[in-house]
Length: 397
Image (cartoon, rainbow, N blue to C red; front, side):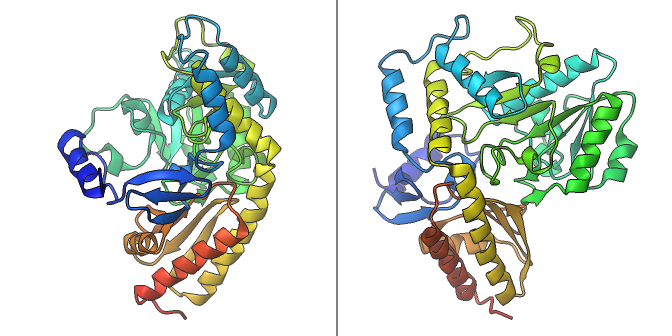
């Protein structure tokens, strides 16, 4: 089946809820992927941050092969050894005492929201989220997502959410009431345009939560697990959340979400309160254990910091050259370039030249390369990006 046949099959049988790029990725290895016609690409979006240790890492493949020969699934009716080991590993590298496993970031956020509602004991049920946030596509997480473009046509939504401007502490204080049970935010807004919470804002949110016994929920689905040069983005701020959600890279390419919490909060879930048929099954838990092993053995958190700084400097060179670049944003290997014009054309030109990136918030080019990326691959990506700018006729200063 060639690209055209695959595209036709998709259009005939798959619900058309995606604006797909006309590309069929056929295989991948490390930082590179190949399409059906054998063309090679540098993957600097890595499955929207999922392939953080690169495509088809040998340790992930070994773990999957070993576990698949023993047991694929048994459900959470029974104890699952790889799941227990994974929960311990996540708690040991984070603030958390307990973990709930699910299949996606949206589900991880659903669990966090349910914990927060339980914390409020029916009297406090409102959760404040940030404008331009993104927390998922279920009805509840869509309601938590403060972007009307995702919500249009899907109401009515579950009540109990308020929105506040990102990085505006005074406006946030105005929205806190006796009904507030939690404040939920992304340390770096991914879909919102790679916008990072300021230190003053994050510290202020933490103080509000501690002073009023409000839960702090951090959505680190895109920015967590080494992406920013720390294992978790909250570690840049010297604070600790009460709940944190993870997903994307956690199982090395397989679907997995996790909701981490302190004991005081985690203990609010009793048997029967929440569940997931596939959550943390033997196969995905084994893959996630292999992912954490690779992160440690290959020192990828440190490499994300170092190569992220290098990448940031290379992007700053472009900003100095092109007046239409408004701002370079991000941390580690989670980077964004805000343009004065929509970035769709740049994404397309880069793809023609062998570089996969995407555009979020219409004008922000987003870069989420694997944490295994090398400096020479960063140089190659920057050269392609510069070529795309030139080809579009957007001359330098």
